[in-house]
Image 1: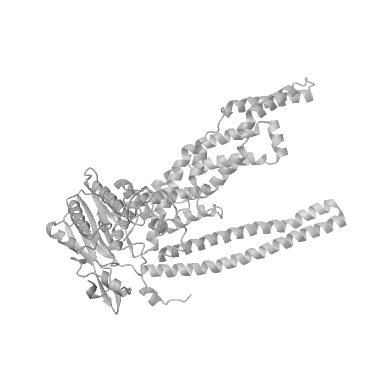
Image 2: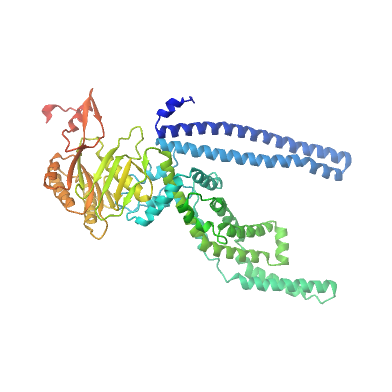
Length: 626
């Protein structure tokens, strides 16, 4: 990597500086990984040498001095081997941790540069077929905002972020409280990175995300059968009676009554206890595997000092209250795991259960742990999922310094959206062109004309995707952004449906009808609508008639919007309605190539470019053709 002079570094943008720092960190991590792997290889060789050496020297001692000296010498000689195993495990842990850090930094770089091939695959969650904006704004899918933002380790954390982005009725108090947490996490990169690392370290290599729903489902399933407490008490009393009668038989020549009580104990244990304890070991192993991730995450949240993080501390309050902390309950589970683990050896398990109802006791304790966790765990998990989704938004702001701003969300009756230098987060910084937007009760609807490929559709998505980000509690790509509480509806990407028998035109009409119905719903907050071409699926004459009537209906509603169109005849509608404002994107031909500036200009578009594009593509278009 080429070293940069301080002067050149100072000329770089904040994002370019952040990229350069990440590249330096990656190079340093690579060097550290090489060193740790070399150390691991050396320790692996030493382990083999020490083990073989201990066997050979121990064998020589056996031949020379006999078994006693052999046992002592072998035990002594194996001490260096055991130490090497312990050290090697620590080195392997360091290798795994540095590998995760390397992957994390590489993913950060991919998010900053929109290197989609390097990003984790998109997560798929259900989207209602008639959702008013999810698909139109690229919030979901392979090249989507959700995929770009999502850093969650848990499936539910990813789904929580998905829910926030697609929320059609965000509650102001909830969003503002969430935004406060996201802003705090933005200033706490160590917290975000360690929270991610604690969870990621405990996940198996072949597992991409942790699924909490499996654990919650297991906790909600009843163990079945009668309660274990009466059986446990009865068998415990029988076990004590067995010991007393056996002691009397051995020491005081009592009759062999213990044979009868032992037989009764065995019959009750087999007939009533076996069915209830048959899945004990598998249940304990499942719970251990699921809690392995949570143990690290919850311990981290319990031990963190929430300095200058009052909103996050309030969110994590259940992790800080003595007696309610997850570690208290997890320790109970660990004691059950230890008890069940003793009976993995069949002989030891038989002896333990013969002496006392060992399996029944730990099955009873497991049921108690299950009941306690079923009550407490959903709340703990909900906090973790909330933090993961909020960390995704905070990381997005951190990875794009100098390009983001925290939106102002105004609680006012009159609809309003005002932004300066508003840009699209799914367009690379080097290619992104930003524009100002000002929509209010006086100039409520932008009627945007312009040439093909001039940027009309991207501009509509820019407005919508940033509003979705703001209502999710995240930052927006702008230098300033203020909006009132609006509903969002977009009809940009309309498709036909063969399954439902809808043609493209009918699907478009149906979508526009839904939009108009939403606009007329006066009982809800005002609507912000984004429309890319009206009635594309019909002929020019009928499209123009229908578009005029539709736009006039929109102008009479209580809402804001932007409409992109190729029909220059529609710009005249602004003369009859003060709520309609003409805007346009322009182009020019330079050296035989179409050039676009992607800047929003006032007024209607003065030119068209369809014929130019046809000519440049080699189609037989000449001025006489028209």
